[in-house]
Amino acid sequence: MGLPTAYRPVYSTPAPRTSKQRLSKLAAACVLLLLALANSPAAPGALEDAAWWLKSKRPLPSEPRERALALLETSPVIDGHIDLPILARAFFRNQVDEIDLDGAVRGHVDIPRLREGRVGGFFWSTYIMCPEDAGYPLDNDGNFTTPTHRVRDTIEQIDVARQLIDKHSDTFELTLTAKDWKRAIKKGKIGGMLGVEGGHQLGSSLSSLRAYYALGARYVTLTHTCHNALADSCGMQGTPITPRWGGLSPFGRVAVKEMNRLGMIVDLSHTAPSTASDALSLSLAPPIFSHSNARGVHAAVRNVPDSILRRIGRIGNEGREKVDLSKDGERGLGWGNDTNEAEKDIPSGDSLIMLNFSPDFISEWGEEGTRANISSLADHADYIGKLAGRQHVGIGSDYDGIGKTPVGLEDASKYPDLLAELIRRGWSDEEVRGVAGSNLFRVLQKVEKVARSQREVKPFTDIFEGRDDMKRRDHF
Image 1 (cartoon, one colour):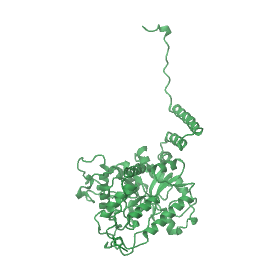
Image 2 (cartoon, helix red, strand yellow):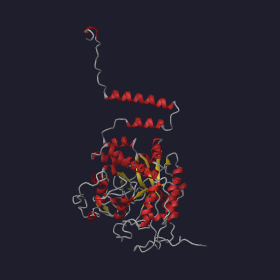
Image 3 (cartoon, one colour):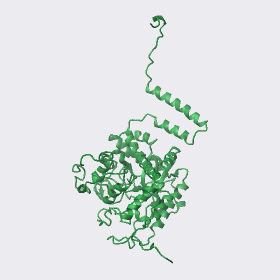
Image 4 (cartoon, one colour):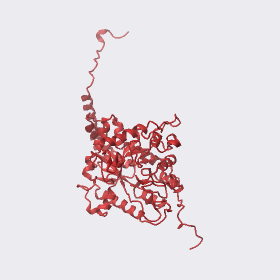
């Protein structure tokens, strides 16, 4: 029957906490957590994790650039392609003692500008130009086996990148897994992996591929501006290049499988669309375009066709209605429209197109065209986001590998300005974090997962068909 009214306790409804009160309580709890971790034998990195989590819970300002900077506090920029090693070779003869990245260095990249740009790491491109030797003629009749110094030179570029990382070890760290990279960032370091920018740098050998991986390379661009033993290139703007293989060569298909086994990302920038299509169909791990834009915005041969962007955009929606490319930038007249490219599956279930800052791939044609700026590069981001999905957009500036930059993106200190422009255009906080770096980490983790699943697979030892120096002998 209940208590008499006089004996019933009176409950009052507490006033709702204000956001300021909630934040104060959260901060107090976090301080207690940090103190507990600091005075306990916690797992390595637990203190950094707690501090990082606290940063991520701070309220974000509304002004776009301030918001971009705040987002970059816990999701810093991961650039898919920086050519600092070739700058070291061209201007300093790889003499590391002459290069002081703690001060101003010619080009686009040094430590002060990386810090100002809120960079958490980048792929050090170990680029060496295509050979001019016999075996790589413009008519593509060579067999890609004429000896060159490209493997030697690539090792020198890997060496100079690693030397620079070691010289500035208080800032840089060579991080060989996504987990290591994230941990380095939480320690305040600029992490990084190496990239090999062209299949011609393998010397037509899978042994070179494995050696590069052991030295810290985590992607190989299948081609540069020349065809090679692996695949066809898109060539250079204004210089038509006759297809050699029609996409991946038979040896190139094996190379992709070996890259999947190793955990080496398949990079499709510079490749012919047919090569990119073949790799997207074959690779079990997500391929990337480490520094490319959209042909539908600017019809440079180095950019990605609408059909491939739409194909990536269908991930998770395969088998649905036919794709109509007629209303996209290439108006249905671009590569792949007549072969239903956009409707093909992508077994890896992911990919990434990383924005290139070269004006020639944004809006310019040499000295002609509209001067490239932040807004015109953001147009590419919007366009790729529309066709492929914003979760498939990243940054691959090509800094130190381009002679000219867009207005407003003059060097590595300017990344926040690009992200601020995306915020103005309505990109969500999560989407901006993705472009900055988390999309690349997602792809990298999937590449590593595929490699772990193939631990029992033996190395591929196929020999390129053009070689005549590896014939089986009965005696010496």
